[in-house]
Structure formats: C-alpha cells, structure tokens
Image 1 (cartoon, helix red, strand yellow):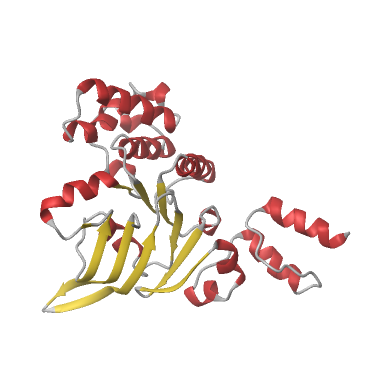
Image 2 (tube, rainbow, N blue to C red; image 1 turned 120 degrees about the vertical axis):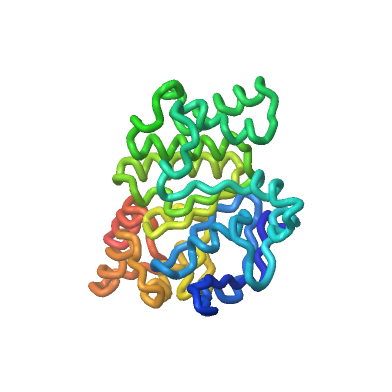
Length: 277
C-alpha cells in the first residue's frame, strides 16, 4: 500500500456571494514510503493547497486522500494522520509555540502524551539531526532564519512522522541557509523518511527522485528530474530550468549534444569534458 494515495482530488475556495475558485482539479497520484518528491509550479498552481490536503488541514471538495489507508476526511482518525505526516511551513515564526528551543521541539510529543523520558530522547535526537543541539537552551526569537527553520524541522521530527512536507520552507532563507536545510532533508530521506518538497527553486527540485509539475490546479507532468528538465514542460508551466540545465541547452545550440539534462554543475562539467575528448 502506498504511504499517500490521492485519488480524484479537487478543492475549491469560497470567495463569497456563493462563488468559488477551484484550486485543484481532479488530482491523482501515489507516494511510496521513502520517496523524495518535489512539487513545483507557479504561484497559484495549487502547491500549498495540496500540502494542506495531505495531512488533513484541508478536506477535499471531491475525491479522497489516504495516509497509510486512513482517510483524511474521517474526524475520528485525523490525529493519526497528523502523527504520520508533518508539515514545515514557509515562516518558522508561525510554527513556534515556546520561547526556548528545546521546549518548542518538545511541544508535539508532549501533546501526544509521550512519557517524559521518551520526550527527552526524541528532543535530543531531533536537535542532533538538524545540528541544533548546541542551541537547545537559546531563545527562539534570537536565532537566525536558517536556525529557526531547522528548529521547526526538529519539532516535526520529534513527532517521528513517516512523511515530512516542506511547504516553501527555504523561500525566506539566504543561499547558505537553503543549502544547509537541503543537506538535512537529504539525510532524513536517506534515513527512510518520505520527503515532499514544495518549492519554486528548481535547484532544490533537482535533488528529488521525482517531480510533479502543477499548472492551474492540474498535474501536467510527473517524472524524474532529468526527464522533466529535458522536456518542454517547464516552459509550459512558466518555470525556469536549474542553471546546469540552462547552460546545457545553450551548449546544445552550439554543437554539443546533451541527451539528458545535467542536474548539478559537476555533472555538467563531466559531460562537457567527455564531449571535448
């Protein structure tokens, strides 16, 4: 059974006077345990709406979302859904619930009624996973943006979810902070946690095993990064290719022959060297 199963899902917002806007239109896809999926699309494509549907913050207007077979529309089991699927949002200040770092990370397990000794263990593990154990006694508000986001991730980790969704979680960070978060995310995925990264940074999407492209509330592509970046779908979605793929396209117009899109600058340079031999 898939960890997440989205079947025929549509979602509409009310805008008053009996009028609605369809944010998502008949979306269907599965996510397997341990996958690293990127969801990309322009603003208004439905990415963040989809994120909130995946852990039951929103309920589909039509269709079903199943988390390990549990229907997110069932009020009796929604708590189980939210234990399994954690979300890290764009602004970590909006997720903070305590003044001190370790207290903030402990908040989720405390609400689950976890015994104190296990809470301490979970907080220690979560802070270590995001390289914030040295800052456990610091005041949250005095941390940098990147540090705050790492604490937000630790708070989700302490719940020990099967799936972590990052909803534009690096968009407020500088390049160094983004790289640090992406390094942590990669390690979490390698440890078996399913990652869904909702992002407008294509260099981040390149780290995923699979990319789903949304446009106007519909899925227009679902494939590997290499296949997605080598196709015309990015133009169709109004998105820019990551820099290595952009350079490869320009080189293709000048006598080179890249059969697939390079995902990193190292991969690009290796291919250039091979073609120049």
